[in-house]
Image (cartoon, rainbow, N blue to C red; front, side):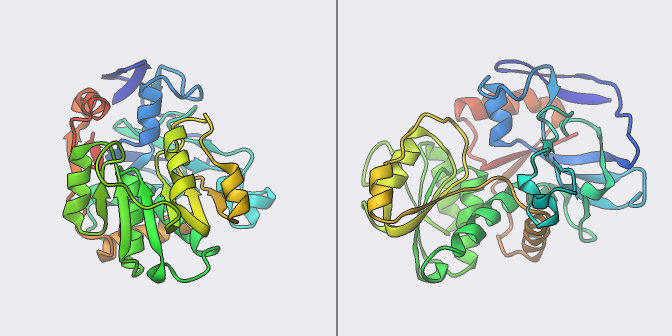
Length: 330
């Protein structure tokens, strides 16, 4: 089969790879659409020690099931493989399983024509749903998970809150879309890439700004700050911009170099929440939201053939793409 393989820093190669050999309980899926995630870019940049080349990356996928009980059905993949028996799994939070594995990390990912994955990790998609839109379910579930965790802590409904989102990639944009759908109308979103700011602005769900120049959001002003970048600089900004008693929802994992003003967080009773992926319930809810049109038409998604994946990675690396999400088509 053909696959896009991470072969070295700043290098992915479209080449022949062996077809997957399913283990007991696995199903083979023909991949019809697979998104490029920020974590794939971290590997591409040589910034993720967990992803060692050569490796087939990719985990935001939808396709046609080729074997097993769901054979012939279109499905999305839940890329998070867990033990199913620990307290976290049994308690409805399998994303915290101590034995979790993510396809495209140590296991072969979905930048390929076919993949083998446990049948329990398949979720059927509604009939007639575009697999490109279905492939956006995974990042949408990540954003939804962040919003839902924050809602549990915020002192009033999100519809009454001021929200600030740091980062205008798919996670940041989808978080803005979910917040807007929930009635929040005071949303600011910052991104250093002018093309991405234009994309977010066109959606009409948030006011945009450049964190490097021009007018900046007020300090001590936002009930909810979602950091979809996860860098020292964005954590410092979140610490400044969050209101007293507010919530910082940390989703991005760009670096681990500090940045939080822990003194201010302590003195102003700011809650800092870490967010890792999603639960299966979040995935299903995100899939329904996309299919129902709650997040709009997703016109900001760009598609390219998997064979042109190296160019897609290079464009994202150089900041040449306005798309909040590039989806590859094997």
